[in-house]
Amino acid sequence: MVSPVVQTALRQMQSLAAEASGGARTEQQLATSVGEGGFAEELRSSIVRINEMQQTARAEGRAFQAGDPGVSLDQVMVDSQKASIAFQTGVQVRNRLINAYKEIMNMQV
Image (tube, one colour):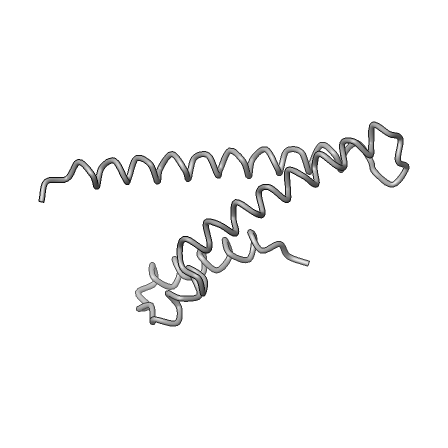
């Protein structure tokens, strides 16, 4: 099973590859690359996925500490790193959005 984050990234890479090869993007391609709900919905769902990853990593860490035989150390470490990278990416997206907002607000009309 492929995660939604990977599917979204794959769709974006495919659309960029098509654009780089000279193919024009249709309205349907634009809608699928952003998602049905638009940018705000995609941002909201990304935040939810980041939160779920952090909760899963935390729960696995607790299960490992409790001695659950079904949870291995490497699984805990990999999931913790995935959650950490996802959170750092979310922070960088937030920072870029804030910078873009500030630039727009400072534009003279």
